[in-house]
Image (cartoon, rainbow, N blue to C red; front, side):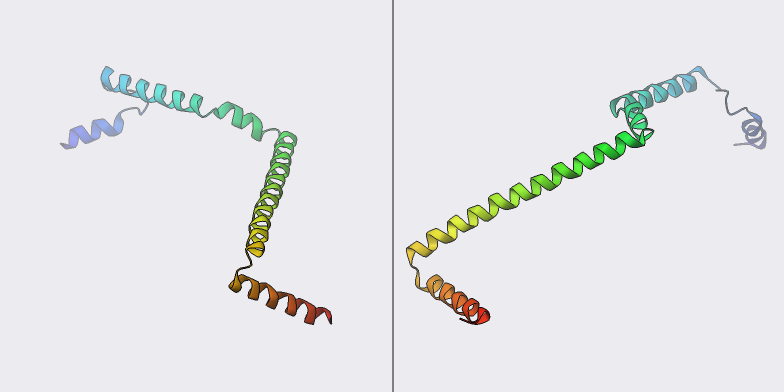
Length: 113
């Protein structure tokens, strides 16, 4: 690149395009960006962020639903474990029976029985 070419590039207005091909590439990039922004619903997200009451309400409801889901999930899991342990007790396995007997002794000793 010669000095005069570098000088011409510096003097060129950044808003101007040297060829129509540059302009078409720029338009394609703008169209692509607009398509991406439409796909991610940016306008709805900005509206959501600009309304603090709605944002707080939605986050509160989201937290309630998550807490309820965790509580229900833990309850169901604990129920399944208890059913499984109950079936193991009825099988009267020596290892598990001895383990449960030790637990009963420890609990009784702790409670003063």
